Image (cartoon, rainbow, N blue to C red; front, side, top):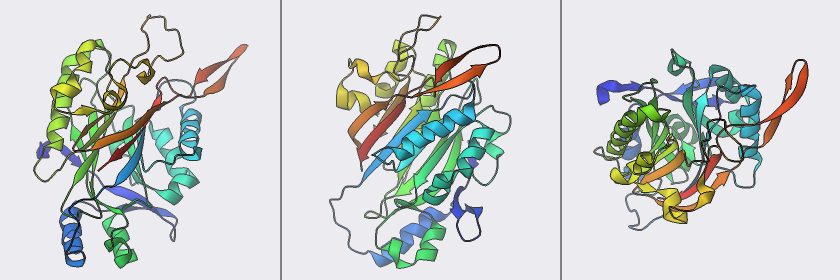
Length: 326
């Protein structure tokens, strides 16, 4: 599996130079662990850290993708519950550029794929992950801030990687390793996914879920979270989380029959007569879901030459907000 990984870096905006600066992370895990062990020899046996995640497939193919993505980002960042982690799926190169140019993102987040567009080559869109800089720190941040981070204020970042998946559509999974400030020898994994689409790719999704569950079981990993667009369009898809020994956060909190968990086809009539579905999910291992809700998109007016303008949703998917405890 290591041979299939495409190593990436996580980038943060350098306010002094006004440029995106790559942060090398390949060896960060061992360096961080050693630094913490020297400064924090006594760690409490019992500790809890809570993080909030918002995941949203922002819909690459509907009209005005950049404008819609900006509205989704604004909805996420201007709400009363500011997220620590943002997972985005179906990010096009133009949307990536608008995200990196957003002043709020530049001031407050670490962002994957900021240093170049390598991940966007030969694919129409990719996943991107944003991490709130007041909760997460890279190796370079710790060197700049000295003992401020070493005292345990932030999660430290380890490896950032894209796992190549068996896929009809060249999908991969983007993951970031995080190290809790109160447990420097412990690594958890945040995995942002967009599994294969449509009914004829169920076998691919089954393989993809097995690969991702095994990523959470790799030596040195204490568990983590898999979130994003699972494209769970069939009854067989609904069993893949359980089959792979993962906890479906929505089911754990709301039960399997709660109709409020649908994230796709909500509030619209489709020509294919497909009803609302819970295509987007949050699955966990070694973590505990505490709160979860579906975020409904607003609407945008799209003008049509010679015709009356129409309103379309910001995305054909709803977002998911989840608070979980480590």
